[in-house]
Each structure stands twice: as C-alpha cells, then as structure tokens.
Image 1 (cartoon, helix red, strand yellow):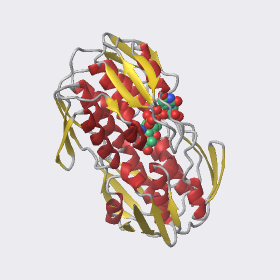
Image 2: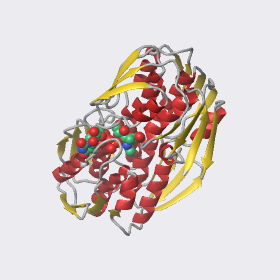
Image 3: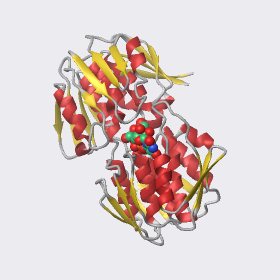
Image 4: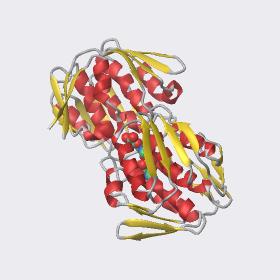
Length: 418
Ligand code: EPU
C-alpha cells in the first residue's frame, strides 16, 4: 500500500490543469450500455474509479479501449451479462448506475445492493422506487437487487430527496422508455447536466437539464456519439484550497469557474483573493485566513465533496468556524486525524465546531474515504514537520496524479510504495 510523505510549510505557487470530472466520466462510461454503437469519450481522467468502471463494463461484455491518455472508446454490441457483482459494487458504489441502462435496453439487471459506506448508509431506495414507478418489478435476492421490465414506461417521478446518481440512473432509463418521464426534485449538479449532454448527442430527447424538473421523451434507439467530459470541480476546488492553506498563489487552468461559485464565495469570505477568467481560477493566499461558517447543500450550494478540505483550512484559521454537513450523516472521518495534527475540533451530531490554531504539526495519518484523505494532504502541506498519509488508494480513486501536480507547484511530497 502506498503512502505519501509530505514536508509541510511551503507556500505553493504555479499553474495546474484540471482533470476531467470523475463524477461525470463514470455515468458517461456507463451510458455506453444504452447503444450498440461506439461512444468516444475525451478527457477521461486516469483514476481508480475509472479503472473499476472499465472492469465492470468489461465484465458485462462492453469492449473498452483507451486510444490515448484521455480518450476511451466504448462499444456495448455484445452484452453477455446483466449483473454488477458484489466485489465491484463494494469497491465503488457508482456501479449501481448500470441498473437503469441495462433495464432500459435489455429488460433486466441484477445489481449487488451496496452495503454501508464510510460516509453514511447511502441507500438506493429512491432509485428503486422510481424504477418501479416506470413499471419495473424489483426484488431482493441474496443481497442482489433484481429488476425486470419488458419495456419501461414513462412516468412522473418526484424524488423524496435529491440524489445525484439516482437522477442519472433514471434519466438514462427513461431515454429508452415508452413515453415521457418527468423527474421532479432532480439533482442539478453540472455532472448530471453533462451526462444529459452526452445522452442528447446519442439521440435522447431531454429538456430542463440543470433544473429540478427534467423531462425525457423515450426513443426506440440511441446511437453512437463523441463527447468531452467537463472539468472536475472538486479537484479544482481542492487546488484552490491548496493555495489558501499554504499562503501560496495557484492558478487552475481548463476549469469552469461558474461551477465553483459557492466555493469561490466562501474562500473570498476567508480573506483570500480569487481571480477568474472564463476557464481559469487564480487563488492568492496571504497569511492566516479568517474562520467562516459552512453548511453543505446539493448544487448550487456548498458541495459536501469540499467540506473536508475546508475543514483543514478552518483548522488553522483565525477565530472559530461552524461546519454543518447536511448531505451525508457520517462525513467527519477526517476530524480525528486532524486532531492528531493539533487541530481543535468538536463534533456534535452533524456539526463540527472548529477553533482555529496558529499551526498544525505533521503526524502519521490515514483516512477512510476520498475527500477525507484530500483534507489530510492539505493539512500536511500546511503543517510544520512531516506528515505521512497512508491508504493513498482512496486518493487515487478520485485525484489524477495528485502528487505530480503538487510537486509541480513546489510541494515537498513523495510517494512511497511498500
Ligand atoms: N439517498 C437516499 N436514498 C437514495 C439515494 C440517496 O437516502 O436512494 C441519500 C444519501 O444517503 C445521501 C443523499 O441522499 O444522504 C444524497 O446522496 P446522492 O444519491 O446524491 O449521492 P450519490 O449519488 O451516491 C454522488 C457523488 C458523491 C457526492 C454525492 C453528493 C458520484 C459517483 N458520486 O453520490 O461523490 O458526494 O453525489 O453530491 O457522482 C465523491 O466524489 O467523493 C463522492 C462521494
């Protein structure tokens, strides 16, 4: 297992390029199941979760070819299996995204029910209830969800709560259904909109993308398409915090600043300078930031995927801050590790009370999920002394070449493989 060794205290400076978005690339790769023709995806990041998705799609019979570093060709003309096995769903919950497309195109799907996870219980009841509304028969057998439907039919579905992958699963299912499906209280995340853009290129009829009401008119067939994945707003946001937490000056290129408005506003509130062009963001830190309060929300609110990184920043801010997590019930796994580095944080329920300290000190730490690991890397970059971050495979699931990018900004960071 790899570890990252970070010697902190260096202000990071320079330019870095955003990778393609993990949470757009995964559903878009899965969307290839909706047609027997080729899907060509550009700007697919090289990540653990992309590898897992290639494994899952190959298991189903999709041919997947990486022609160059960033381009994938996917062709689902010989599907031989209709099941996402436990082994894969357990490592990556986004595997449940195959449910909608398999059911819509082949009339059947069997997907292992994801168990609990490091950040919360994360059930898929909303996906299943919505598919049932479209006429699917859903049953549970030996830990697997089995869904069947000769042909899904359009329906009006109001989600009980906003769900990103639930919206994506249903949107994909509805593209090949009989009639019109209206999704109410749908997720508005840019990754959902980007998936819709690909589906429209494949011949789907979708309206209301980016709003809570999405309407999909089913068609008989979808065809091949070429599409470029949007930039990763969470990776971009993480590098914005890199500049703020180290008192550095970092420009992130090839990003979409308007996808990060809530993050930018909060960073400005801490006192750092943020400058934007249409496709780049520059963040200049200058001494200790101010403590601020944060509450996570679905898009366009402050993303839960940025909460851990901001907590590392607040740990060394001037004054106190209150961070409330409203999306997942257990997303404070980084707190105990930050405490080991000298942070002063108290958690009551889903709220963390952070009293900023002047300095963190390096320590051996590890985390149990992706964004928590990112927050420990950030804390390590700011801390005095050496921080060793273990279980780097969590980071590798969602950040492309993170230590290479940080090295390029002047960090003292090294990967050690045991
Ligand atoms: N929920 C239910 N029932 C459902 C579905 C969701 O109760 O059927 C609850 C969840 O337990 C959670 C809330 O609804 O409390 C929101 O969950 P959502 O379904 O939106 O999350 P997701 O689709 O499983 C995606 C991202 C996550 C990101 C969340 C929230 C992908 C592949 N994953 O997960 O990304 O945190 O939306 O924005 O798109 C990450 O990249 O680190 C990551 C965890």
